Amino acid sequence: MTTPVGRTVGEPAGDGRENPTPKRQPATPPRYAKAPTAASVIGWTALSALIPGAAHLRAGQRRTGFILLGIFGLLLVLGVVGAVVISTNLGLAVKDSTLVAVTVVAAVCALAWFALVILSYIALGPDRLPQTGQIVSGIVVGILCVSVMAPFALTASSMMTVRETADAIFPSDQAGTTAAPIKQEDPWNGRRRVNFLLVGGDAAGNRTGVRTDSMTVASVDVRTGNAVMFSLPRNLQFVRFPKGDPLAARFPNGFTGDSGQGLLNEVWQYAEDHVGKGKGPQELKNAIGHTLGLKVDYYAIVDMYGFAALIDAIGGLKIRVERDVPWGGHFGTAGTIKAGYQKLDGEHVLWYGRSRVGSDDFTRMGRQRCVMGALLNQATPSVVLANFGKIATATRHMFRTDIPRDLLEHLVPLALKVKDGKTTSLQFVPPTVWPGAADWVKIRRLTAAAIKDSERRVGRVPLAAGVTASPGATPSGSGGLTASPTPSGSAIASTPARTPRASTPLLTPTPNQQNKAAAKTLAEACGF
Image (cartoon, rainbow, N blue to C red):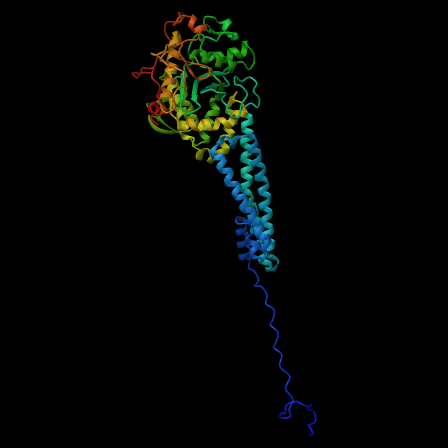
């Protein structure tokens, strides 16, 4: 059989036409990402400043984006842990090593966030923007770089300010202090009470040396924060010094000083002039501690004019003025602070506490303790933070103290305890105590009773085992109560209850029908 030309054997028969060549499908054209807009670049860059890695994820750089997110999450966890640790012990916030660490971390974070914003911006491809968009986005991102660095820079600056202020106020060594070296596990060295002498000093240009016009001992229970404030009149005469003190041998019958009057506010400057430079604070601590039957652990002197700057820094103080207080000169010709609830600036707070027009030292003492109480009550953390820079500047120039720098981290939590605890105050004024002929045994008895009453206010904190207290008990140097009203061998025990040098006080006492022998809370005394 023959086959058609062009066919092979076994090939099926057909119509003689060859199969057509299959048509090729046209190739899919490439797809390009939509060109970004200036608004989207700016938006994703800003979001990346808040959530690191967001811009890189948007740009398709997933690995880099997730790494940045992980680092950010780790930093958040560390920040929360640090905040919790510090909130449980606020003293760590003023520890020198903490301040240095926070300063370094803030500086590093500022540089890191600056780099993060720049890298996020580059990852989004701003070169694909039109020229106008590149210029606008570049300017906005530059502003954003500065903005993200600002909080870290402010934090670092604040930490440096705190550190410099603390170093300027608190001595870095133990020289001249009466305390044992600071122990982290027991900063108060086993003491139940710590006693601070708070002094208001006036070194005005028309005066020679320092006049300690306001002297208050704050006796603080370190367990509860309950405190008793003992105010001593500046014109208290003929105070004694403890045995072994350089001035005890010089004035065996009581301090007379250079003037012969022997006022308490002369002790500081007399010691500076006759015992040695820098001896004034210690001699005043010795005299006041011996008078009260307490061991005064630390002192802090506040310059009056620096104090006025501090009041201005926190925005003034709200004070209840019981009656009009004229001020200025001998007759109050400069002005009058009106009775009622007033918000006073620094100058008027200073005059309110110091004006002698129509009043005496005892009235001034009462006003001064109300000023201190108002400051304690109104200087809240929010107020301090809002006015931090001004407060730091004022504080640096107004304080001098022998509280060691290492104790500051333990002093902060104690101060917070005091703020939440019960604070009572006791003034040694007529008719309870006559400054010109003081009954030293009575002063100690009243001191012990006020401390006992302060401890009783807690209720849940009993006295230590084996310790008894009575109205005549005297606080010991460690803050406990002993049964003896006066220590053996003391000048107080060996001298008459009243000094025959003066039978009447130098100034007329303020008429007051209230019992000044009972310690009162500042809220009761000052109407907070």
